[in-house]
Amino acid sequence: MPVIINQIKSSLDASEEEIIDKAVRLAGVNRCDIISAQIHKTSLDARKQNDICFVHSVYVSLTDVSEEKRLCGGSSRFSYAAPSELKPEISRVKKRGRVCIAGFGPAGIFCGLVLAQNGYKPLILEKGEDIDSRTRSVDTYWRGGPLNTRSNVQFGEGGAGTFSDGKLTTRIKDPLCRYVLEQFVRFGAPQEILTRAKPHIGTDKLRNIIKSIRRHIISLGGEVRFSSEVNGFSGDGGRIVSVSFGGESAECSALVLATGHSARDTFEMLARKQVFMEPKPFSVGVRIEHLQADVERSLYGKNAGNPLLPKGEYQLSYRRSDGRAAYTFCMCPGGLVVPAASEECTVVTNGMSEYARNGANANSAVAVSVTPADFGSSPLDGMYFARQIEKNAFYAGGGLKAPASTVRGFISGRPDLDTPLAPSYARGVAPCEFRSIFPGFVTDMLAEGLDSFAGKMKCFADGNAVLTAPETRTSSPVRITRTERLNSVSIENLFPCGEGAGYAGGIMSAAVDGIKTALEIMKRQAP
Image 1 (spheres, rainbow, N blue to C red):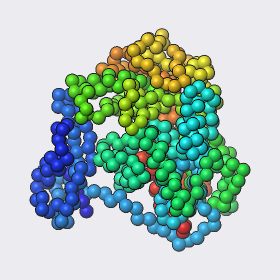
Image 2: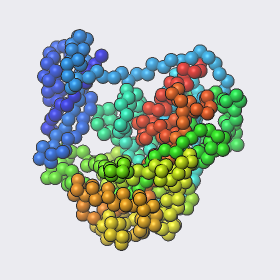
Image 3: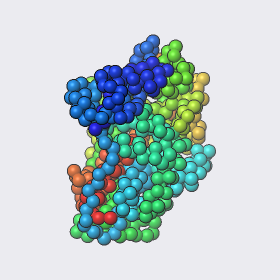
Image 4: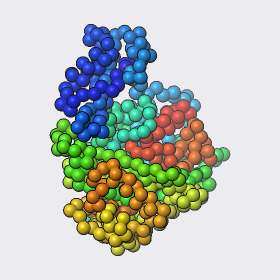
């Protein structure tokens, strides 16, 4: 099994050959014993601004298996490369109906792809439009037009991740992550995502990749239906036998719920059908926007502007003694703060950037953790809590614009937009007091977090950054509880999946959860 050699430091301008040579010398193996070698992952170490370097891991396959075993048994710098191929166990038990998948975001896409690749012909039902129609609906809303509540930044082909940075980072350690990356490359993603420690595709490239995957699923006998929200199902003996959608119904052998974190209608439908759900912790907050150049000066110092360095990114966190946290996530270098509402009379923000990340501004969520102790213990209380914040923001901003303020204005309680930075939120922003939008425990923690971050990065300390509210779709406020075999605790052939079910966060972990769900279904029924 190939070996990964870790912690190989290099200068910013080192060649691939120099990096591999250094790794081979560290391993103490002869070149003639190497079948193949390539860079596995590359990350940037900018902790010391006067000594910025890249850190690599190198993938090496040797002729002698015993030599690979010796390396991996002797030091933590060497590890076996986890295989990325799928080895499904396919049942011979035939069941009536098709596997139906509700939602065509990352979880639904990869669940459908794996099923289709193994002879199943899934029926995929997506509430929103195909990516081209969806993009037109989103552009209309961003230009100040009406919101399409069925097809927007949250709903439609590709899911919420389609209008994001296309980030492929994740905290989960699972061999299937490599499989997901390889599939993205197969369908058009840049090869570099296989080696970058923080890979991203960009919303512009991601849209075409998703279309390519959809066409492949269809070529294998799968079916993708847009503007087809699953609005009910019927059962017999604790099993679903059919699903209803858009005035139609279909016989169903298994129903995968991959509806995303904003599928509030679906959560309410499940509650009416007494499917067991639980409230779960999530986060609410704002988008913070800096000049990208200021971010890079804060991170790289005198090296800012070096073309060999990647676009500056940060990840910051602060935890109080009582356990409440403020943190940044979904950082979009060179990106935009975008309107992301999915319900009338609400304001929601998100971040987005294209592959080049060449915009003037950087943005990130600054989120505050909230728990059922804050909003209630009933399954949907967190959802209603977030909705109320979104409505408060709508009225605070006058029904069109998003509430905003400089950091300086927010901290002082006198909101303003007196800053050299041009806020990027397309529908416009208005200076507003955030304490009229969020509960006090959120704004207090937000202020504490920003004060902590100011001590870590200069761009947080000058007060000129713009905060735009609210960010409420950080993750699902609901968990559709499931067994170890991934089916609902209430219904044997209902499979809650991905971010909306409360079992993932982001494109990668949602895609992996979709694959695992497909593999479990294949164990239970034949194609």
